[in-house]
Image 1 (tube, chains in turn red, yellow):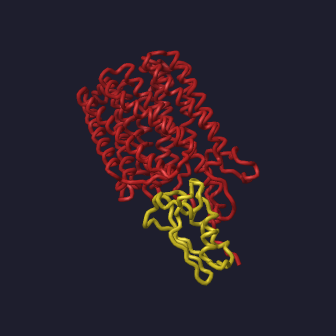
Image 2 (cartoon, rainbow over the protein chains, first blue to last red):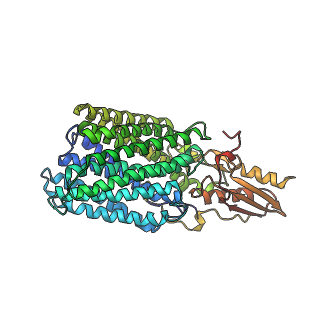
Image 3 (cartoon, rainbow over the protein chains, first blue to last red):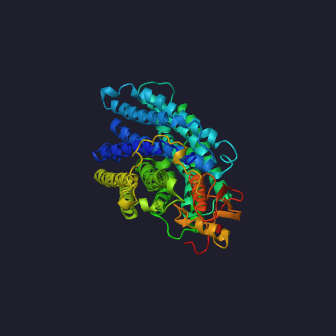
Length: 452
Length: 95
């Protein structure tokens, strides 16, 4: 059956994540958070709308879609995709409301205690879908699957540090958590751990597919995995110390250097992939992914000073990672994935029977490139504004990123509605914008022709 | 059917595009073997990666295209990933 390995809820995961992205940027433009002001309730809410609502939801939705591609086997328990989505979105909203209660917003009281429980169930459901798919030679035997598995371990650490801090902030002293030591580890496990490691794993496969470059499990990929495992192991060890109320700067520095080394090795591997590509003219998603890779290098270089000196160094490093590296990569590849899945939904049954457009025909590459360029400019401006402690500059950067995000949302809508295709080439019925199409019987697929 | 049925089947497969790469199946080196005997066409093909979501769609598309060749009454298109596809199989003139 066509699309047997396709997740039916990917568009819904993406739509939910985009809604959180727009909401977080609107709040940032309005002044929630800014240089030196990240500890208030509104600022914490905005950070989590962005990091958890936008980035984590996009990554979880993408992993449910692409882990079967990495492992060449369907996802386990696909029926959990919708409840996991609803609980992730609901848990994020509850967490944001809980943070607002720190500023005196009464309706959010108590939610800091409840939100981690809801998110735990959501993450467990996602793990139940992905872990069985990853087990086996096609999963853990490959560099991509191993990296995604490592990312899921980091997700566990991310949740544990976040839950401990959330409960401590909410007045529930379940652990003697040292908030000052736990916060950088929480950021490291999220941005550098779960999100970056998952992006590494998925990009190995997708970059090779989009560039027509040879895949492999060579020495560089093994070195990336080994170094990333060391960095994650150190970070999780430090997390254990922090949750017990202790910290260790030398060990933190060691973890930061291991992280930076893993990034350097990964960038060398992607450079090898890029140079060995058989597709001479790259598409817009890959061109702008190069900007994301530049931000990855920048954030890794900022990591040791961020651990040592904190303050504006740490803010700039975290922003470069979240907005520059992870968001630019996600937005650029989102356009590609939306067009790819839309093509499959609309044109798959016609291939071999009549002329069909290419996936790239569904995208306005110039408009996409302009919006991604604006996003990158905003992310660079925001990083600089944080490093220079310029609040108004940060708000201006957030405004540019909001405009870019809205432009890319419009582009995603245009792709789903086939707006860039000549009307004569559009079918009469289009798939739903966000929700999955009703299940099709075997007649939807090609049937063997019984021509005379 | 054309004088050389195998050539006709290959020509039909050149009309089936890999929608992502923008090249046809033969130019992409995705067709491993073609045999035609007594109107029965057998094709062995692959995809660029084993977990490719387009795998079954491309197989069915190839099957439909082969069945449209005059003289072909039966088509059997099978997928294999042994040996796995590599970009070195792309025809030099493809891009």
